[in-house]
Length: 309
Image 1 (cartoon, one colour):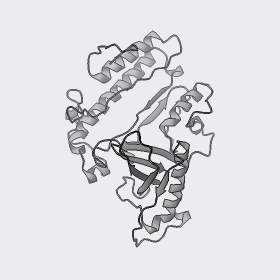
Image 2 (image 1 turned 45 degrees about the vertical axis):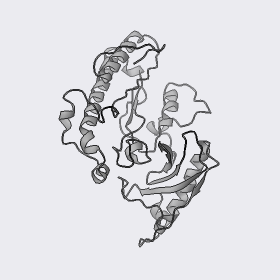
Image 3 (image 1 turned 30 degrees about the vertical axis):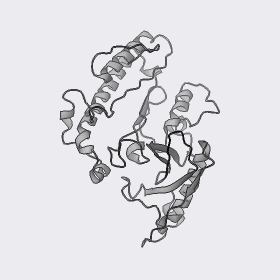
Image 4 (image 1 turned 90 degrees about the horizontal axis):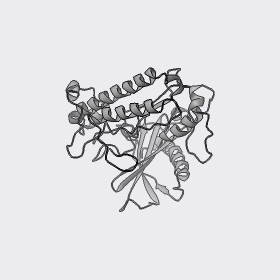
């Protein structure tokens, strides 16, 4: 770990605990004035040099026969070997979050502090490609996100599609700070307060696995993804090819790729248009998408009222 000037800082103990201790010290020192604290925990994360998820002593042993999501069970990958350590890391991280909340309670800060808990990606354990996170599947994209504190104490779960870019405007809105017009994303407070009936119908995500790049649009029911290949990371490709289409209502674990089936051509056309709009928003308005080769299908062709959500 390093300080603001780039100097080494020795924080003893398991890294999650050491960072949490430092965070609690910071809060204690600044509890009499407004503060903003961002804690970037690295765990749970793959350790390249060891080819595992090194949980603290005794924690991996608690999850030797862990629950395994159906997509990981079906596709294999490294989950059988790595889930115990991964879950052990998550458990210690949960305990650290509890200690942080206990500190806020002891300093009477819970009513005037907003705590946002999220992550940048999830993990597919080498089931979708040769590494752990870079894909457009929900195993990579579906992340934990929770808010608590002033304005977020009603409990419950929001079922609308929310993206990481919605976090900054949400926090600004919750603090009564004007949201810049140039900021992407939307505050979720209207959803929390149930004052908004219309919300975005899709979200956008992208990933890069070495020389392979992916772009996708996701609605509540459908996932549409395209891909391309590049020689260098700095390349800006002008063409993508349709790659995957999933019906998340019938196939929530994304095991049946429907791309190219005549029965789902209408879905594909609509989702392609949605992705074009999203690509334009992120500055890739020069991109074209090559349609997939049609695959014969015995299924009936879905009509709009049957597939749209």
